[in-house]
Length: 327
Image (cartoon, rainbow, N blue to C red; front, side, top):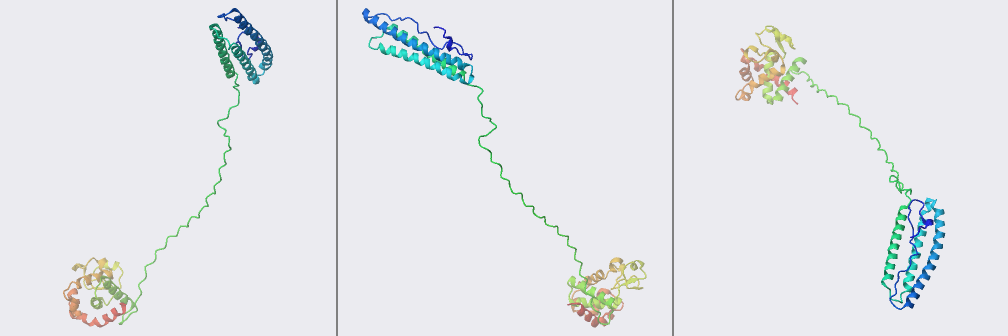
């Protein structure tokens, strides 16, 4: 093969771009001398013409390729021209083969065609390689971080409307306990006596004692203390608690003149009118048939007084007081 300097790739690919067309014919005569001479002449003439056309075309394209080689962006045009030249050579080989189709091809002709086909395949492979190598590597690539479609701005959400915190409710003030209504005195009593009688009736009612038991309790207190809360001169301790009078009947204290020494309770407890009333009524309701007894007999069984008949004189006034207190 000859060196065609005009088709060298000046960008660094190198190598020849075509095969030589000056190879002598190797067709041997298998028949009469005249047909062989005529065939050789026709082939030589056709190759000469095609070689001239190819040489002229290579010269023009080579100059064009040299002018474009300095510009890297136009390298593909020079490569395309080289491919066109190779295709022209293939057309010439096809025409030569077609011209000799009337004669029986010889083994030498088939060998020559095979050699040329092998060269053409190599040339095409070089063209593909050159095209691959001349692909510009500095082509801009898509930035993976940049998307083609603009991202939609997030829709602003409405800020939640602050809800007013409920004001803490002030702690309700504890309701004061209702003050017991003071009952106006009846039956010749003063207010202190009437207040003590009211305590006896309300305590017995809370205990569930019947009305008869409340009358017996009020009548007994009228006899023992005249409905005053007594302290004892014998027990100085009793005077440390609220009292309305001082008595000297041994250690007897309170509305019912109960004696601590007899087991009725502690001094401080017996000086409390409510406690003293509960002590009296607890014993009264334990007496069998107490409701059917005379008032004086029922009171005496509880008090064990030295004057048992004295309680009966207060029954009428006690009944009047209880009726005034109870609703």
